[in-house]
Image (cartoon, rainbow, N blue to C red):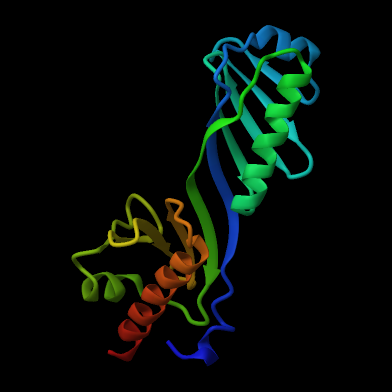
Length: 188
């Protein structure tokens, strides 16, 4: 893919999911009563806590495991996770921030052309599948970088992948795979 096509592939990271542990037991009732921006869900056994900056939502379990969603970068996810740990410390828990891991990154991109999904799937059969009765997008899996791409007929794509140290590079690689595969399906 040449540099003139890079402008057309504007990849936007929309969600980063991260987990971490507090290494202590958390009393959910205390968090619900004394915390700020908290929703207590006793039937599920968790507390939802929201932060405004960075804008994330955290699911907190009594075991000390916390899942953060909604960040738009890996740095924001880590910053938000550390802020959550600090909020829990201020509530009186002996929280130690540990085992931080980014588990999922979701990005969106729009191709400069529409894609005929049936032709696209036929040309990329081993790694692409399309079931129009189940989902309006073709699923394109790239095992080498552990990414799944949903390709829609309008040309918009969503890339879901696990985190690596070069996440944005991997998302560009996945989008370029789809771009060249989409161009190949247009030529015939």
